[in-house]
Image (tube, rainbow, N blue to C red):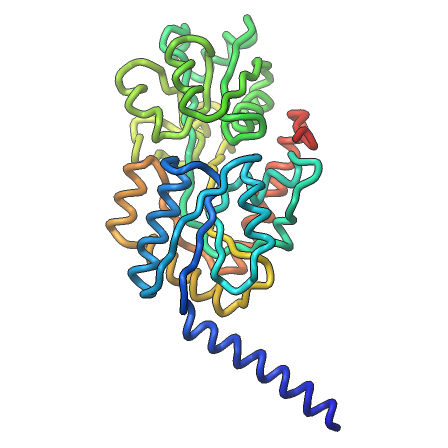
Length: 322
């Protein structure tokens, strides 16, 4: 009987602790780990969210940059942190959906060690070509790629630029030579100078160069036109039905973080993402603000993205390549 009462007391105490945690959280500084260097898109997203959370919840939210190894350094640190809500991570679609297939020995398990908190934004990509390339459309590009060897750049092996190009190639039956870079900015620089022919590039670092005529946009990867580049039609409308790929940014927490804390953060971030100020700022950066979805819906979304990209990665010969 004493054992039964003791067990009940423990359960009640844990339940009460969860309620108190949710009601009082946060009581001290929360750290958001960013898997890239300061100044990039992911860093700017995290700092915007951190600032708004601080204003809404009255406690400090600070960004700590842990770049390197395809986001796995920051992800491993987040996975091994105390699951108390005071360490979060600004994760990418690569972190949660692609790395499990690309890396042989991933130092974390997305389905176990990290849990989605809020889906913040989508990142559509533009299919761009060097301005001197004699193509004006997707059909022209496919035709030319079947006649001669073309090169395409990316922000690195397994990066979203790379996988977009592999998906495009598989859907059109073409082959292009991959030239990896250490980021999208140097890849865009070489596209403009003619060192490479093709690049799937995010809107932010490329739209002004495209509008200045230094590169040519053929289409965008999202199913709908992006507000930051409404003049560019979706590839799905340009002969590639079903082409709908958007990288995404998601706030995650260590596995076993109390669900009431996750639910509170989910509600707060979703609310932040619906404000006019944040929406306008994100659109200006070439992002698609999201800020929707329950914890259960986010878990299902990550699993669907893993299932979607695993065959693409394998068909590209990238499984276990890192």
